[in-house]
Amino acid sequence: MNQAEAAHSLVLELKRLRSEGVRDLYVEEESLAALEDSLRRNFGDPSSSSSTPGPTAPVSTAVSGNDRPKPKPSQVQSPLEDPSIHIPDPTPFSIPEGSKKERLDWLREKIVGCPTCNSELNPGGHVVFGTGNPEADLFLCGEAPGAEEEQQGVPFVGPAGELLNRILDAMNLPRDEVYIGNIMNWRPRHDQSFGNRPPTPREMNFCMPYLKAQLEVVSPKVVVALGKTATDGLLGPDPTRRLGDVRGKWHEFQDIPMMVTYHPSYLLHNPSKASKRKVWEDMLLVMKRLELPISDKQMGFFR
Ligand code: URA
Ligand code: URA
Image 1 (cartoon, rainbow, N blue to C red):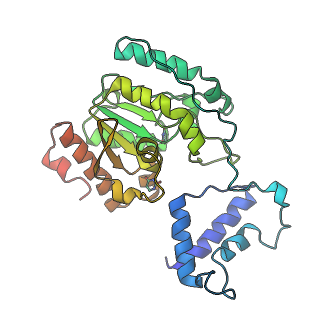
Image 2: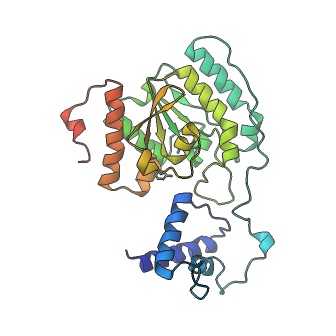
């Protein structure tokens, strides 16, 4: 697909979303930067010439096209408006002494009863706490529950979870031997009927003590950050960080060795052999670190 075709597809997709009633759109910072870069190369830099169309011209035509009356400004939510402005600061707590299992049970009860978490749920939804072995050597951290996770109250049970299960299978690690958690304990609310919104810094800040407490109790040998949100949550946000640069390398979260890799849902959207191999190479590094046996067959997956 060349850039003109890509721009055309984008316009069609925006129109389709609008026809379905979508009024707000969340775009990853990285995607926005790539789009801006591509438009600038095609249409020039708006700051260098006032006669060339600005980089947002084609997109804004698509969003507020003239085949429909323009919505009044009050109907449009500014992308700069924080949808989580009402989320409070977290309240400090300490976990009673006990076995790892007892301490996790106490934490689960606390989080499942957390009033802020509960106030964010969609109808029929559940607060989602981590799952797995309290004695796990490997702790996998995702972003936030999606629709399936919210309904079942269990992390990674939707399409991304199925892919995560296949990755664990390939590592010869049963899912109930590892621990799986998320940055968020609820599914970030948004007005669309489908898709997920990445959590805001305020939402992440509220839930981080709950994730840190799970990490402290489990105290795994290795933590894997799945995707950008988990990486930003665990390493602290850094606008210059690109996942492609930090994945496949060892980092540290509170003295625990931490591997960064792509999120399974990124693989679902980019199912090339090359992306699968990258994630697999990251998992091979994790297996080595955990001193798990690695067969020649496993070495060669996705090559
Ligand atoms: N994606 C995540 O990051 N976490 C889940 O629990 C499900 C999907
Ligand atoms: N960008 C993300 O936000 N997540 C990924 O997993 C890969 C790229």
